[in-house]
Length: 354
Image (tube, rainbow, N blue to C red; front, side):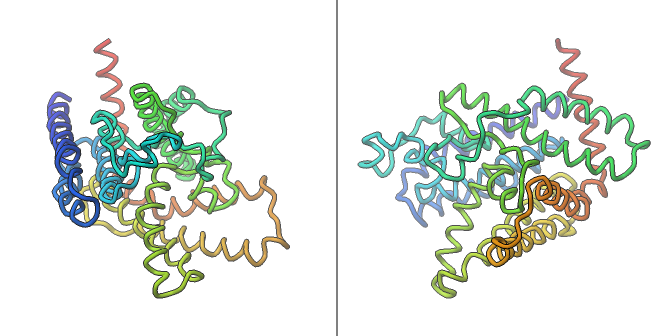
């Protein structure tokens, strides 16, 4: 634990130094390709940063927070877009919003928005209006549920059927992400004094794949991919395919990019060559999202599936394809066992400390 703590301290130092360079030096360059070129060293550092840690949990969080989302946020910031650009953090009625192209936000806020998978809530955005104020589970109940499932998984794994373990892993993945990002939201929201988007919008209530991937699951990732991949690809492809034919290839490119980024994350977790199972998972789901769109367009008015049936079908499909492709690298390389051991070690260390 002591050696890992020193490694994390060095990683945090490198991370903060890189963000210092981006904020005080590279951001002064005019927006566009030139600023993007100045961000290139930071992109490289963020990409290789998880290699320096040995803990599976630390490698997973750093690769997700920094390598994945951090790089994409800086990519948007190269053109004064995204959460790191102050223009999106000001009140729309503020006079600076209309008259200033770029005004530096506080460095602390820049660090928080760059590192954590959070987004300041924008009440005017349509895709955020579906997020309900009332929620059946809060941060503490999700933490308790994750602890219970982790204990069951660690203690009784050999005695449980593989299908039961599969369901437990799916629930643990959802709870883990919601708890971690929820904690980040609590800390960041308190420090910045703003309201932040929740990590997800009860994805188990999704009534379609479009609803699951676009409006309920991992809202920060969906928002980043929408602005870095989907919208630019629509503009680029419209020059060659026309406005009516760009949606399908743009959607597929988004899922392909997401799959490749998850392959990179899994590489940091397993340290073995990728087998492209995770990419296959996202490509298959992307194809089904496209097919579902056609189905709704041509048959939707005639055939309406009740939510009580549509929701289990949607979640069942995501979990089924997840079992076939997404979780295979984790199970094959026994990452789940290593993470369980790390959680147990962390718990014992915290218990002994207090």
